[in-house]
Structure formats: structure tokens, C-alpha cells
Amino acid sequence: MRIRDLGVIDDAVVELAPGFTAVTGETGAGKTMVVTSLGLLLGGRADPALVRNGSERAVVEGRLALDPDSAVVARAVEAGAELDDGELLISRTVSAEGRSRAHVGGRSVPVGLLAELGEDLIAVHGQTDQQRLLRPSRQRGALDRYAGEAVAEPLARYREVYRALREVSATLEELTTRARERAQEADLLRFGLEEIAAAEPVAGEDAELAVEAERLGHADALSSAATLAHAALAGDPADPEAVDAGTLLAQARRAVDAVRHHDERLAQLADRLGEVGYLLADVAGDLAGYADDLDADPVRLAAVEDRRAVLAHLVRKYSGTEGTLAEVIAWAEAGSVRLLELDGDDERIDELGAQENELRARLADLAAEVSQARHAAADKFAAAVSDELAELAMPHARVTFAISQVDDLSGIEIDGRTVSYGPHGVDEVEVLLAPHPGAQPRPIAKGASGGELSRVMLAVEVVFAGADPVPTYLFDEVDAGVGGKAAVEIGRRLAKLARSAQVVVVTHLPQVAAFADRHLVVEKTNDGVVTRSGVKTLSDEERVRELSRMLAGLEDSELGRAHAEELLEAARTARAR
Image (cartoon, rainbow, N blue to C red):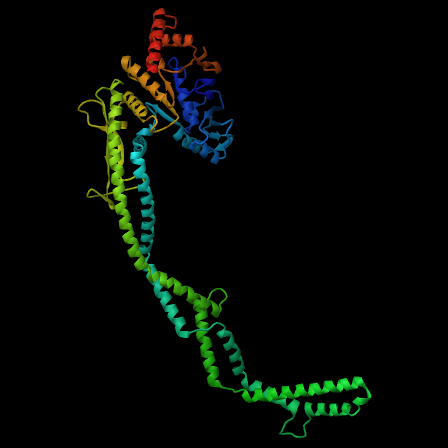
């Protein structure tokens, strides 16, 4: 991690390694800036006051070695990040004006993404930090992981039934809350279908009626026209002297027939005149028949118009955009199907209600099984953490789990109680602490002082190591208010935690620092600034000098050096066990 222009740090590189890393230094040297830098890098609040005087911005850059199949990598790649040789580069910039920017894998991202990644990357513990395990939801999740398959298996089945119950309940609620609307829709459909059924419309009927109405409405004019046309073609009996087309055509045919044998071409024309004669006779006959058949029937015309009015009414009410009778018929067909659905809702409501009751019963059984497994795991957890606390200068402290349910009349019934339920079961889980005999157990955030809280969280993390897998733990001032044997035990437990995770500890206690696999020291120059060389990894000899300073305040004290060497040897022996 590289830090530039943050607090007293000008430009420094902090090289963290697997295992246990201790960070030490004189008071005010800038150790807290290491913690602050990690906080910024993982989505912490940006305070412009952190920017070093005279600088425009503070920058923190980090290189993270991650499991390529981890959720963190998947989320970062989803946000557009790219890995660099399998590692993820992240950075955070804070300007003196208060603006903040974040980058992950070369891609600009919202700061919230850093916080999201940080949830799965690091657990920060300090006297003023918001502890992740102080949140009841985290405590429940950690307890479930600690319990393993005993909780995971019934909880997985519980969640399947929970999802099914949610779907059934949502459908049932929609059907019941919309019962009035559905009843109104069904009534309207019945009325419309009855109206259409009474009219018995036939596809294309409206077009046929329009043609018939047009003919009946003009029957007199049509009859007169057909009679006149017939007289012009075949003659008028009332006027024998009138010349008609048939007579003239007969004259023309006789004229050419008399001489057709003299010219083949004229003979062909004579034949054509014969064809015209036949056609003219047919048309004249059809006109006579049309005139005879045509009847100006006002009764039929009235009936046709009445029928057209009925169909037009249906079209106005039930047709679509085109306004045709075919759309009315289509509406009736679709309405019949929908009415069957609506009429079947009551039966479906009964079926869903029975299904919901069955799922609630199954859910209650599984919730009870999950709760029972949690109680069993909680007892083991509480005993293990209490044992750890006994070695951390809190011999009388007792940790317990409060596993409770919230009454809810709309919930599920367990042991005669109707309780609230959710995707994680019915249990509200909280870790309680009684720091000394006679003390009332209280939530750990309220039941411990600042120094006690750090040790409680350390004990919890040691017990949960592997069950609540976070790759990195950062403890700031975890040793506050302790010393002597308790300090040695804190160092021992941090080393134990470092077997399964990366552990970074900012400490003032040499007993704790002696257990570290890697020792960093933060040093300021004479002008009060931490430069690039101000955060350094100590060699074995330099480590003895730093521990001597922490023990006696004198780096070159022979007695202090001897004590420091003895402390390092004791720590090595303890870690090897």
C-alpha cells in the first residue's frame, strides 16, 4: 500500500505480508494513518482534514492478492475492473476541497463499491471503529457459518419453502385484494357476452346487409332503369313503332349475310354480328328478369336497417381500432376465455389458501429445526469465547447468545407462538457480554469498555476464524488497558488467528509485537514528516532495538535488549506449539 500526502505522511510504502504484521512507532509518528489509509482504501469516509497541509490531495493505492474465484474478484470484474498479474489494484483520492474518487482495476467506480468490497476483504477493530460483528445480522450469519451443516442444511430447505410461500402468498393476496375489481370485470363480461349472443352476429354479415340496404333503398330507380334498358334493347310493347337495338342489329346482320359469300372478311364480321345478337338477347332477358324480381319492399328495408343498427351498436361497444364486426366476434371469444378464468378464481383462492397453510406448516417445522441447531452452536461458541477471554485478562467475563423471536400475528406458529419470519428463519441473534460476576449480560457494543471491547472482538475473531472467513483483520490499539501476562496472551491469540488469515496490528505493547511474523515501524524525520523511508520492515537486529525501546524507552539499553531477545524467543517458542 502506497500513501501520499495523508496526515503526517508525505510519501510512504507499507508492505504487508501473509501472517501476523505488527506496526509500531513513537506516539504521534503516524501509525494511525496506516489504519486510516486502509479505511479509505476500502470505502471509509473521506475527510478533507486528512490531506497534508500544503497538498492538493491525498492518495492511497493498494495492490491486493486475491483468490481469482472469490466473490470480491467477481464483483470487481462486473464493475469493469481488470486484474494485473492476478492481483487487483485499487486507489482512493481525497482532495483538499473534499472531493473523493475511487478506482478499481483501472476503472473509475463509486466509492460505495470500495465499501462493498471491503465488507468481504477486511475486518477492522479499534476502539472507535464500527465493528462489523456488532451488527446482529452479522452475528447471526457468523453463528450460522460456525454451526456449519447443522444449520446450513435445514436453512437451505427453509429458504426453498420460504420462496415458495412468498410466491403463493403474493398470488393469493393479489386475487383476494382484487376480488371486487374482478367481480366487476366478470359482470361486464357477462353483460357484453349476453348482448352479443342475443344478436348472434355472423362474420361478414354487416357488409352483406349494407349491400342489401343500398339496393332496397333505390328499388324504384333501379327498376325504371332496367325497364328502359330492356326496351332499348328488345323493344317496347307499348310502342310498336319505336326502333330498338335488336331490330337494328337484325337489319345489319341481314345486310351482310346477303353478300358474305363474296368476301371471307365480311363473312367473319357477319359471324360477329350473330354473336352480338345472342349477347344482346341474353342481356335483354336478364334485364327483364331483374326488373321483374326487383321489389320495393319497405318492410324488408326496415328490417335490414334495424339489423344494421344492432350490429353497429355492437361494433361501437366491443370492436377494436378497425371498428369491424369481426373484432366484435373476436372480443366475444376472448371474453369467454377470460370469464372462465375469473369464474375459476374462487376455486383457485381456495386451492392457494390450502397450499399456503401447508407451506406455513412446513416452514414452521424447518424454522424450529434451524433454531434448535443455532442454540446448540451458540452454547459451544459462548463457551469457546469465554475461555479465550479468561486468557485475555478477563477471567470472569462471560459471553452468551440471546436467540429470540418477535411475536407477529401474521407470522408462523412455533411452540404455540405466532412469530415473525424472514429469509433467515425466525431467530433474532445477538451476542451478550457480562464482563464480571453479577453484571447483567448486555449487547457487546454496550456491555464492554473500549479496552474490553477490543479483547472481546479478538476472542470472537479467534473462535470464528475459518467460520467467518475474512482474508484480513486489522486491530488498532487492541492492547489498550492491558499489560503483563494479558498482553502476552493477546499476542499469542493474534498469532493463532494469523494461521488462517492476514493479521495487521497497530500496537504499543512489545509483548504483542514480539509474536508478529513481520514487524513494521513508522518513523518521522526531524521535521515531523513521514517520508518514503519512514515505514520500514525491521531486520532481526532492528527488531530487538525497537522492542527494547518499547520496553525500556531506550534503544541501546543492554538490559532492554536482553529482555527484548528473551521476549522474541518466548514468542517463537509459543508460536511453534
